[in-house]
Image 1: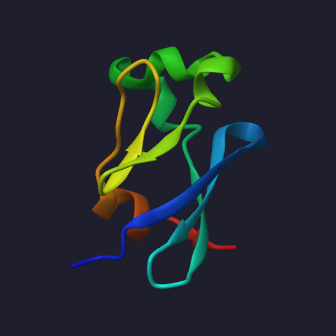
Image 2 (image 1 turned 180 degrees about the horizontal axis):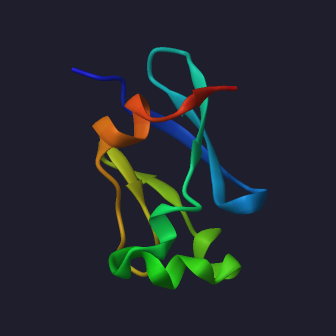
Length: 78
């Protein structure tokens, strides 16, 4: 099982700084993902900044979430 997020901080350029439960801090770039129809609302910076940890993944106020495996496996070390 991949590590799960414990804390998240939205960054500039539609990236997320994520602290995982294994102690690693990684950066996940959402700039390409927000071009997908499901994530388009997150192009609004205010909406993007509503990100929070929810159960085993991240979620936004408008209902979008992200696969925790995608989040961990495609993030870069901070």
